[in-house]
Figure 1 (cartoon, rainbow, N blue to C red):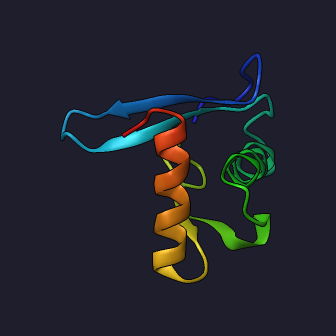
Figure 2: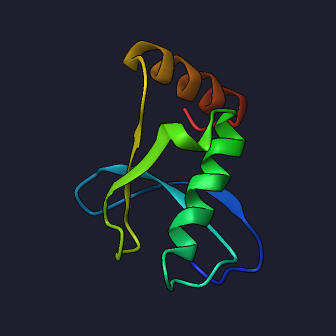
Figure 3: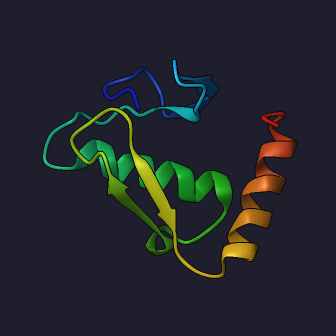
Length: 91
C-alpha cells in the first residue's frame, strides 16, 4: 500500500523476494489515524463490489504490507475475487 498517492487505484500485482504475490494499492489518504487503512478498505470494497463491512485488515495495520480478510462464505469470496482478477487481467 502506498499512502499519499496522487490517486486511489489498484496498480496491479507485485511479487516479493519470496515469490508471494500481492496487490499494489495506492490511496490518497495519509498514513495517520487509520485514514489510509480505511481508504484501502473503501477502495477494495468498491473494486470488488462488496460491502466495506465484509473487509477487515487483519495484519499490517501500521505497515505498508497488509493482510485483508473477506468475511462471509469462502467459496463466494473466492469466486468474487477470481472474477474481478480475470476482468482486470491479473491472473
